Length: 152
Ligand SMILES: CC(C)(COP(=O)(O)OP(=O)(O)OC[C@H]1O[C@@H](n2cnc3c(N)ncnc32)[C@H](O)[C@@H]1OP(=O)(O)O)[C@@H](O)C(=O)NCCC(=O)NCCS
Image 1 (cartoon, protein in one colour):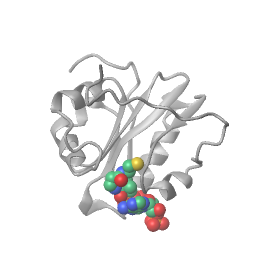
Image 2 (cartoon, protein in one colour):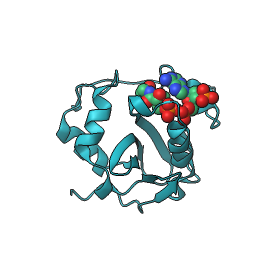
Image 3 (cartoon, helix red, strand yellow):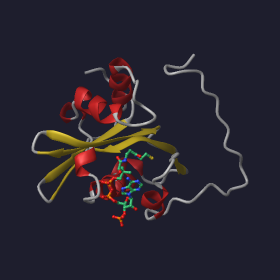
Image 4 (cartoon, protein in one colour):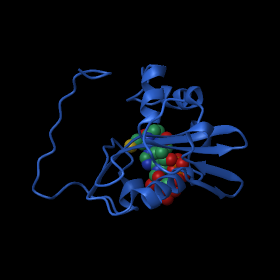
């Protein structure tokens, strides 16, 4: 495993499911399979995801040994976090896994006191609003450049 972000792994258990940020327990191929079904990461190369997992705080939800949900927090562990690649297996949606996953992302002990937690979503606003997220209204303008799948 490539050395990456120095976060302290977190593992929780609820109703027989395990939620973990321990990279050793998050199978890259299983995460890739979940992301294959999304509109934004369908073509993500395996190497890119492996590097991304090493360098962000990655969350997996396991039922027995099956990865049923995945998400990543891109962060400096001090001031800023950006949530991305949030996905629950299609046959497990609507049973509270997304709620547990995102609550746990917000409550992660290594991700407290940040200046800003940001995300972009097409249709899951209700899920994030429930956690306290609001459409940006600080008078600042969101800007971006999209150099390509792996950057410049
Ligand atoms: C969005 C997603 C992560 C939610 O996970 P989930 O486990 O189904 O969510 P939960 O069962 O915990 O439901 C929590 C709330 O999320 C919202 N929600 C659930 N499914 C949703 C969906 N398909 N689209 C949008 N919002 C949804 C609802 O507000 C729900 O509250 P309710 O139970 O009172 O209706 C999941 O549907 C998913 O993986 N979708 C495809 C990928 C995606 O769009 N990810 C979000 C990118 S920002």
